[in-house]
Length: 354
Image (cartoon, rainbow, N blue to C red):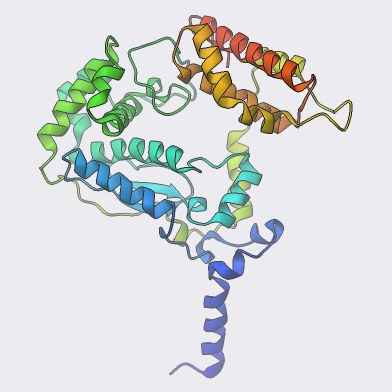
């Protein structure tokens, strides 16, 4: 029988792990806490609600498959395991705030973004569940899954051989990502993908996915492993170590062409107290800039969205301010996004600009 002292100690440790305790810590104190001591769960809104929504979409699409989900360091679906690892920070508002401070953004931080990633990872999971990549037709359509993952890739923004779902033309990076992105578009759009991709070579990939899902829809998966890879609940690293590792991996040289253009429009220090920070203002102008620049380019908003997101991130990282009066600044920002997008389109035929 445990002693009163040991029982009291265990009670204190259990209390310390409750979100109500660590959620009140400062950032500096929170970074010293181990992930395994956070005692996190996929529960509450919006995370659990999005997982349930994914299951409903799979059911409505006629699929019997349901990927299991767990909390880990980041988004991934391990090869051979038909499940989805979800970043731990999405399970609690306090951790989201820390993620934004440390990484400048929260990947999957709103419902739309989270659902996009969940659909993509579900594509990887269903590939594992039914061993789809082993099929000859799958390899003919998407390429061999055994192809090495590149350290980086040179996207072609004008290509219509790939669907557009996540950012950075991710479908172009590897055959397995091409399949996952195509599956995600098929799952999200329902019958409307035929109209949305009419005239695109990528339509053949969507048709193949549609045929494949009809074939396996009511069949039980051949791979039923429910393992959790690198779960947060068993990770002894502190949050501080976690972010030091991530920041080291994310360090990369910034593109020179876009950087020069950005610093011509915005400035590092305000010339007066009335000058506004650039990043919040650009977020406010996002939709009208997307529509205006996309019309000028004669393309959809996908390319413009990627460029504008990059500009906002650089303004945030560099702490830039608007140089001109607001009306002039908006016009110059639209021209900036247009010029960078043009560089990207031209550069895609040769070297990678962004």
